[in-house]
Image (cartoon, rainbow, N blue to C red; front, top):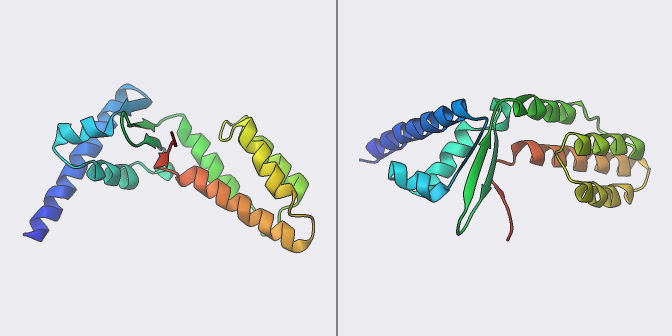
Length: 163
């Protein structure tokens, strides 16, 4: 009985994926309410989350933003953002094991110019990353923190907007 449930879920995931991709063919940005989508396919909202996590990844050219709760929504973007996402992944892969403060500033400027972070977020990151200092350990910590920041930006499929 359990296998049949898994098979039905897999098939339903395929159907939901196909539906969302059909919507994306009409528009590079799709915004829908998770609960309405779940009702349409007679599934629980976690099934929608599963489809988003497994079928709409940044490395596949998608950027997914979600907001949970009353009036919650999900947004899926595709198309031109694929290159932007790939650029971010490339930057992450290019980071060395050590990152000086001037190199970090260049990277933060790039993040701001490409729209990945706001001016306020850059100031917050600058405050934290500059305070690390300039010795080898600080440069290693800075590189690690920037790599984690880039990773979070590129793989954050289920960003929850706090109210």
